[in-house]
Image (cartoon, rainbow, N blue to C red; front, side, top):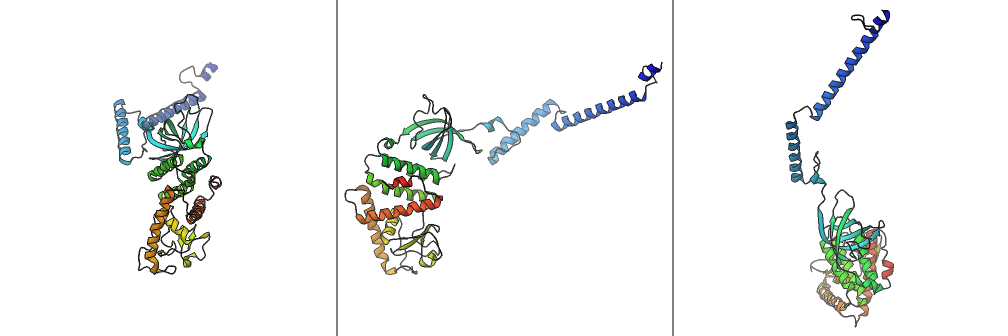
Length: 372
């Protein structure tokens, strides 16, 4: 009897231990039920199914409206359409090809519409790849790629060869010149920054290097003109018609101080305290002006501390004659002018040092171009 009472088999005689256990069990169960109810309420599961479907549809429509209005896919609900990458079609120049695996490679291209891009070409190294021979340095091809805006590498899906750089197999000088163009495009441009004008200049320059109609002696001058066009397209062309420091106009062709850090010519007053200064000869300065199409002495009333206004008209005439000589040298190399070649060498050394200053280091192809 005492045992049965202790175990609570008789009504009204439950022990204190058994009663306490039942009380705790009922309390914990009600607590769990309350927590489950709150979770469902916060998640919206306690609402009718029709209301939940309508709410989801409304949030989806709101997300689409926000994306269309702002152009930024930052809605809370990520729809499947946001994960689809659009295929981009454009023309590109192959700048560099890096082996990534046994079957794939990483390609750097300069494109007309998207600037410089880095993409992975999966399966490009297979014998029967769909890319064929399009992924070769300085090859011009039509490409299709999936552009990823999140900073990840793009995916190259198709490349169709339009023009190959054939001089790489026949002429070492032209090979160095072509690789120098590719190196400049790779070093001087940024990812995703399009420069259509520079792209067209590069296409034209590669065609001139690869053409058999051009003599090898013209390569130096052609490369110099391309470097100046590139600097102009990128906004790095030095100031040549007025002092960079004070803005005074240059009116005569005399020796000038060229400052690499200043980014152009300097008068005697502004030259003081400046570092990295070189002195250009009058003929060299005139030759550089003719290449960039610059004119000095635009105003007869201008007077400063480094020019002679009475020689303005003479300077304009001489400058136009010099432009004709430069154009003639590009077409006819059988009668080279000694002074013209000396000026060409002077300006080439100047532009090489200026590009080295902009980059912070010397391009690798500079030492190979010395023998051209």
